[in-house]
Image (cartoon, rainbow, N blue to C red; front, side, top):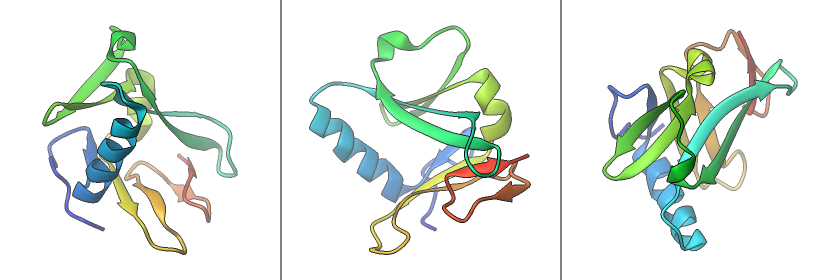
Length: 117
């Protein structure tokens, strides 16, 4: 795992993840933020979700984490399950992609995209 850019944040982002997310955002051609949350489903009960969205969609029930001008947003209900999450990125051919290390997860599935509490 690579080093977090801001360990005091509620959702931590590694340098590799920040770099990759910024590249993906630049491909969109807009100033977007990254929404991270959870939803019911997945093989362990809850699954992670992330997507870009327009900053105008940030609401009063959202927490915003700033990484040098790039914003990560999470609704407060999801943050109950995500607080302390480390989001990393690997470009390995096997097992690559975004990786979630969640200190709140009691169990995770083999793919690492869902968890149980």
